[in-house]
Amino acid sequence: MIPLPEISPPLINASGILSYPEVFQAFESAGACLGGYVTKSVGPAEKEGNENPVVVYPDDSSLPVLNSLALPTQSPEDWESDLANLHLERSRLIISIYGGDPGEFANVAERMSPFADAIEVNLGCPNKVPGEQTLMESIGQKPELSGEVLRHVRASTDKPVIAKLSPNSEYLAVAEACLEAGADGLGCANTLGPGLSIDTATRKPILAGTTGGISGPALKPVNLRITYECYARFACPIVAYGGIETWEDAVEYTLAGACVLGIGTAFLKKTTREAAVLTKEIWEGVLAYLNGAPFSSLVAGAHRQPSAEPTRA
Ligand SMILES: Cc1cc2nc3c(=O)[nH]c(=O)nc-3n(C[C@H](O)[C@H](O)[C@H](O)COP(=O)(O)O)c2cc1C
Image (tube, rainbow, N blue to C red):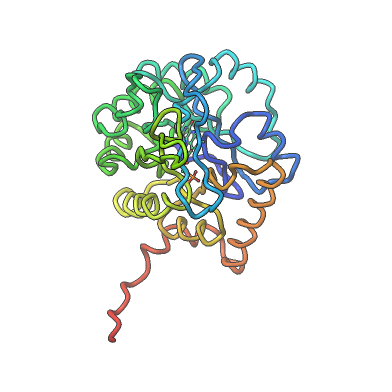
């Protein structure tokens, strides 16, 4: 296993939200407490994705957030030239990739590898352009195929590789296949679903892609469970994603087994400056909770507790 790069503080953005190189530079200038950045998933060719609206984000932040972007991305050539001009002073760069088959995943990994401190393999995106036939809809549900993808990626880069799981899957079987194929860590996890939201005024689905992946607070208990179960089974490095908005969320995921925490939906509708302030609040809260102890002492803490005595009524 190749160790993941040191990410300090152990906070990153999640792929797809504030995830382009110029934003990373703006985050650094704003003094964000992010020890690493993850790019929007880079695919084998430029892709437009769905038309607007692509995100349902209710004003009440406790309601589910849905997205149906369907992996829009610029061309690998454009990524290469943008990444060549990116100079991060103090943070690591994780490049998220996807493909249409294992060979395409490997090609993208090889091209992006010179710019990356780690490669994150996106194994599941539950949204697509209506009618589109895409491996990305189902790859993360198939342990054998996911293992095949990871084997190809492993052979094409010497950087640490993170297999980002889909919650819509037998994720333990997928994780096992990926780790056996050479993954160095797990991403727990992508969006759930797909789900549906209907506009009562127009009586039509809100998203142009009809359905979309669920993210934000509604996703947190599911991805927290995935983090906990993956750590219990594999005790490997885990990058957690799903509804992290407060220091308490970050502490919960860390106790479940995560060593890096990704923030996505909580950054939606925020400027880079506002998002940077949020990262500081989250990290200061974690530090206060640690009360001088090292962050590593918190990782997987929930697995070390003696089981509680049953309480009597
Ligand atoms: C608008 C949007 C775009 C996303 N795009 C990607 C993507 O390109 N690649 C990927 O692996 N995950 C993508 N995701 C999933 C996030 O990276 C993350 O795993 C998920 O949203 C859970 O974290 P959150 O609740 O903090 O958003 C996207 C999520 C959203 C909301």
